[in-house]
Length: 394
Ligand code: IMP
Image (cartoon, rainbow, N blue to C red; front, side, top):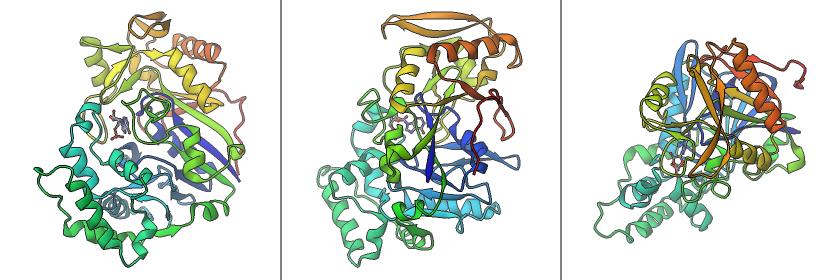
């Protein structure tokens, strides 16, 4: 068994979904290992825009099976809706989607907690109940998929709901709708598996990261982080694989940077240029619809992300968005308050030698090859740049 990993090396939204979709063909399985519906992987299938929140981005390849691995938390209502939507598009999702039995549930009370407490506001979360669901999981009172087989699951959900409600006496009660209970029932139609045993029946696995390295709960700018491990270590923990089984680690970066929600962003740009980037790059959250904060690429943070993940190859996206700028900047040092930048001559298009020079500079600075670049939003819009770097296929 070999597990290759696709990770975002910034604050998420690097374009991982598209890269996973493009790479998936060479794999038997595409597996998600952390996060939940806070993710939004935007893909184009037969020209139609699809945003996947919980289903792995390999689902559009008929020969690929998809796993939601144990490290993930799922929202039953959102998952059931997503599966129905994909089925309506003619995608054979129920036959090819597998869920780890230890995946935990995001319950209505978890979303409610994000609505009634101030914490979510402060961090600028996606309000999908991610933090509270992981908190319950780590506090050992969470509810896993496999618990739905036990006769007391209904009662346990009510008890957990009441437990949290007690902390906010004035707040309106949690609504446990008919739709929620039905969604739990519908989950039974999906294939539940032991992540460990099931993965071991396959040889070539692509692990799909969500969010980005700088949002990792340990490695990121705590508390302005998500509540899971977005790094390669998260792939090992969430899929129950050993570090030595990890092969290629694809690190995906944008040619600039974006961040959604609060937290430090040393290279942030404001004003007209930021508005231009938001517009040109479509920098609006695919889960929340919020405008993304924009900034320049940050080399010290990139080196950090490469180091903690053991990245073996880089994939650079959205260089095309910067086309037409007279100069492009990258932070090379200085402090977070006073970053020091290097300036590069801009490019007219990604075919412009100035863009190639920019990519070569990234390779020289990081010591990691830029294996491929993405050239636009659609499935076919990407190019392998380093044909000398062979990628093993099954
Ligand atoms: P949470 O994951 O909803 O708890 O949000 C925590 C932080 O991570 C917030 O700053 C969110 O904006 C950010 N975040 C969560 N998921 C994503 C994502 O898929 N892309 C970008 N940012 C995300």
